[in-house]
Image (cartoon, rainbow, N blue to C red; front, side, top):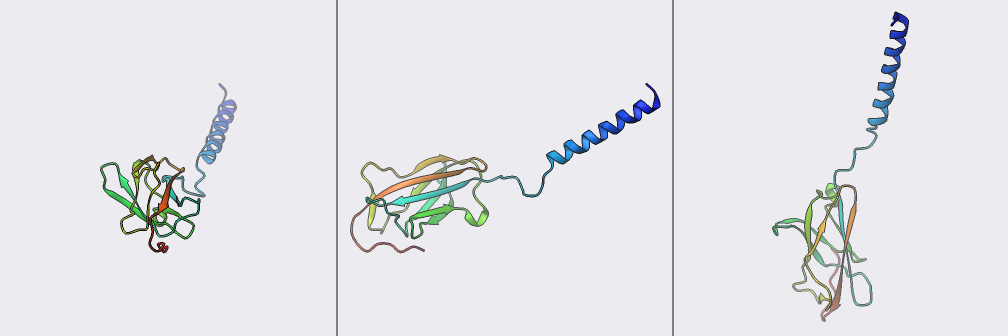
Length: 137
């Protein structure tokens, strides 16, 4: 191969490499490495229930994060950290001392699997058992 052809081919390879490198290295924002877990707690009428504590547990029952439902009955675990590590969890409501219980066809301790960049929403339905309504924290 002549000297000119070799230089053109080498220059083309360098340009192609730089274009490919630019396309693969957009660091304008970090890639997602966490997932999100939100809960929605409603009453029999479908209204959000504020002030209900919930735990995000590892599958061995170790507490990982805690949250408290806001005025609209929603909460998110790990918001200060930007989310939670993708893995398997259990979401549990803590109803001791609250004027609510799980609806008859509802279960506590709901298993979920968090994936990178995705939001998992867990819903719970409660029925009022009396006493004053909890206040959001």
